[in-house]
Image: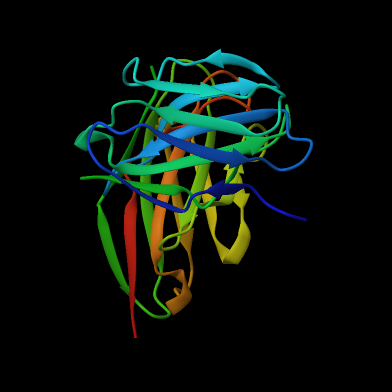
Length: 112
Length: 115
């Protein structure tokens, strides 16, 4: 079946622009995670949803970052007024309640 | 808070040689431990995981890892490296007694395989 998909795969934004990154989880997966992976680093947790409820957003680096999952399926990570330090790969993962996390291919964001 | 340390940001082995990628963790509760592989421009793929039970865990592509509580380690091994094993490998820990919680990753080890 289809895996986790993310769009766009690549995004170039000028500093100060707003961006929206989309994640389509595996159908039926209750949990959805967002991670940020800087160049040469491991992924770092941003936020976590169970269905439409955002249970943990402790990893969001600033109030410019906002995530939503209004219908418990597709999720959007929004970054307002992008800064150069926001340049990274943004990974989405989904899972069943008791299962392992399946990762999408990521969105590479470059802020110029 | 948990943390993961991967010793060696880059490991190079000859084709057919033993692969050993090191991972040490810290966790205040019994950990769930994972190894993921990442190929260029792709997401992470789960190689194997330890939750409870048998401490020697076998995964895909001939990889295995052993959970050693006394050493707080979860090293990844493969008896014979193949060219297709060249990739970035990440060790991760989950601390809340469930596999379905945010993961804490190490910084990764890049594996090169020399013909």
